[in-house]
Image 1: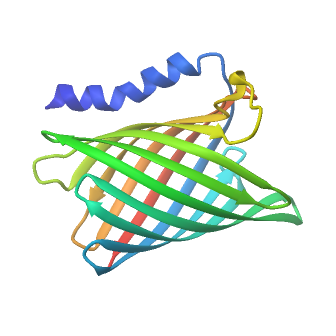
Image 2 (image 1 turned 180 degrees about the vertical axis):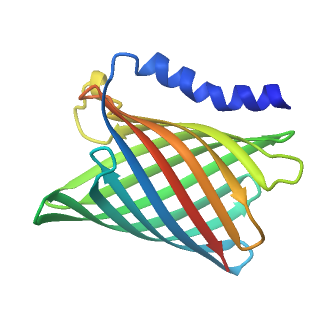
Length: 218
């Protein structure tokens, strides 16, 4: 078991080293979020999420996301959903930018033993002064302990611009490599802790990110 967990948690650092070895590390950032989940019926989950992000070595406020989502668990190995986000970004001391984002989610998954592998395909539209479309593709592998209260995981995600005449060299605009653990405290409360390396491929800069998320289920 220890060997499997060590392999699971160290793969993310190997991948980030291979694909982002020439990246200039620009910042250390932190994130904190709260999610409220409600199931009106067994197959449907409604979600409200608030997330705050901090930059410049976590000394300054960066942005806040407020999201409302719905997920339909069509099968134990497939789910789909949609999310609307309102975003507030601090661009200067007294200047804030407002954005609207809509995301559509398709997520098949497969389990083998205590491992679960999922692929999330998420086209998203962001609107501020103009409209920007991207496709986010994430591959995630998690491991369940015997009691299923702790689930360490690793994931890798790519951002692909959905524009006309995109050069092949700019096909991936950003990539995230992440390792974390999900802790189900009881039937209603859960915590998630994670480390993420965010790689802005076009600019060849990256950031180290530490995050914590609290989830409440009703």
